[in-house]
Amino acid sequence: MDIEIQPHNPNIALTRLPSGLTVVTEHMPHLESAALGVWVRSGARDETPDEHGLAHLLEHMAFKGTAKRSARQIAEEIENVGGELNAATSTETTSYYARVLKDDVPLAVDLLADILTGSTFDEEELEREKNVILQEIGAANDTPDDVVFDHFSETAFAGQTVGRSILGTPDSVNGFSRDDISAYLTRNYTTDRMFVVAAGGIEHEAFVAQVQERFEGLNQAKSPEPTYEKARYTGGDKREERDLMDAQVLIGFEGIAYHMRDFYASQILASVLGGGMSSRLFQEVREKRGLCYSVYAFHWAFSDTGLFGIHAATGAEDLEELVNVIIGELGKATQRIDQQEIDRARAQVRAQLLMAKESPAARAGQLARQIMLFGKLIPSKDVLERLAAITPDRLTDLSERLFFSGKPTVSAIGPLDKMASAKDILSSLSRRGA
Image (cartoon, rainbow, N blue to C red; front, top):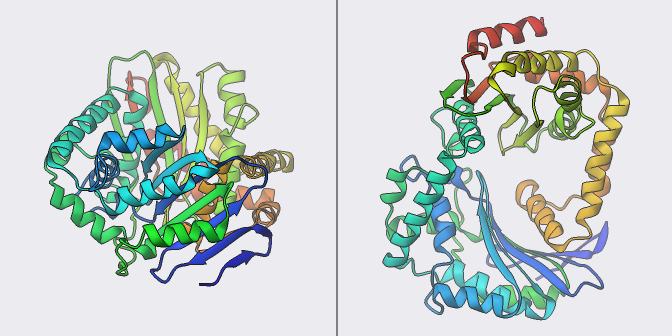
């Protein structure tokens, strides 16, 4: 097996195992700890129509017992050495990760391999975990700022897995069996879609040997890619009247996929509009007009599409003005963006990149996302060069294409009687873009 030392950083090494599994490490001198994990290029979007919530349930069940360890033993073994073990499911990826002292890396590798190759999906544990997830669903439904985001995604991509809530529904979760979990695992957790990454007090060759030995039980069959249909942005309007103190509001548009040319420009545009206290929306909406406590913009990227959105919460009496001001700021972004604003946003991205180099967990996650999503490791200087190529004209042109060339997505929950209708919002956007 060859070791690919990265020319931009000799502390980063990559090895592709004969099984198809990719192993990446970054040795961070002087650290006594390490962060490591298994990232899977499979998430909620890889579910079939009748598997809603199954990816998330699998993530939970991975910790509920293996042929070698009970759920309690898994928890005790990692905590006996002062470490931590966790997992997360997203739309297109799932991750299982650990943080330990460097001498305990072999234990963490063994635990991660055990839960991913030896989980038994015990029926009693499954029923208990279903109940835990039902409580999680209930808690999310009782949290307006969670509900508004779920409605936002569902409306932007109506009738598609990319827009569905990751948690599933009570009916779908209750209907799953251990065979359903095993089938999803076999279909999606294949070595060509799995990446083992570590950063910190790590020696590459020793780590590769540990991974090769412990992960030999993974499915080596190549999976069809993609396993889901190409996303179709639909847009639309979804509102839910509730007796709340504040109205939660989201206004969004189809964004840019992470491999497209304007991906980085979209990130910078989101920062200029609502990425901090100096951003346009924060200054205009909160500081100047006092319309809400929090307002921000964001850009989510997927493999074939994206979502650009603005979120705010305000009282019923300020809702009409808030929406008008947000639309006004979107219109202004098509006319003028200053170089100083771009420089400020670029400085924030640069700081995040450099600060990540001081955290093994942040570095492991960063490396995993790069190799998983882009198929290669991207030097920080390359990212900074792409950011440096972003000009004011490019951002005003992007603003025009994002905000005024298609149908918006509107999601709101709370006291909404003073909020403009979907027709009026669309009309306002059309006039601003004219």
